[in-house]
Length: 204
Image 1 (cartoon, helix red, strand yellow):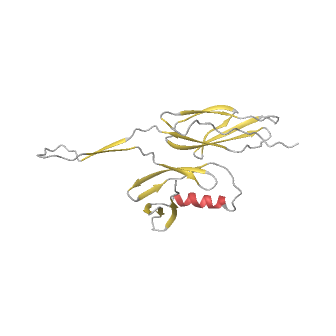
Image 2 (spheres, helix red, strand yellow):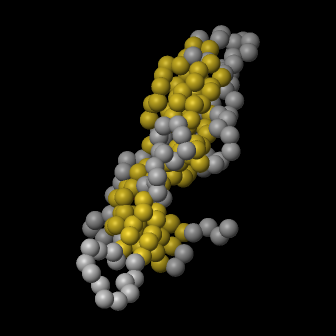
Image 3 (cartoon, rainbow, N blue to C red):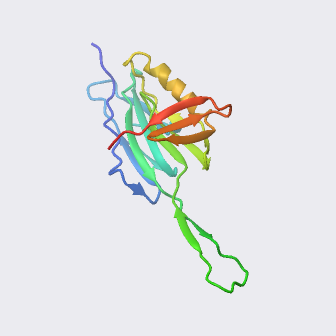
């Protein structure tokens, strides 16, 4: 008689709030009536975090930014579970403060001084069509560089061609060198000026 394999519950990471410290994730899977759990694999932003793991395990995650956590389990008959996916936001970096206009010279009148602060994590994340992805980025004005993207490992049969489209999207991200807003559209272009992709703001 066939068996569908282990079924891990969705990864529970609490509310979608930012955590100021590393977070320890508890993992548990069951294979009721089956061959029993053999091992499991944990991925953070598409990269192997720790495996093989047993069915009951903990793992501490200390990656700054908006992280995508994926977990899959194998039983002793080598059936693989569906992938459980969760989102984990960790902010380990303090804000950056900037003072403009101040210097060590003497002035004989009022001097305007500007104070500003930013709390940028340098990460972009979202859905690539089937899988969730995340990548680092750096920006300076219209200059934009996006690093290699890590993604979860689901396979989607529908809609037709979604996996090929997803790979094209992720490859295109790495070619981006400039970004420019045109109304509600964001145009991302390559170093040659070719259009890599256009993103449109969704109302709401």
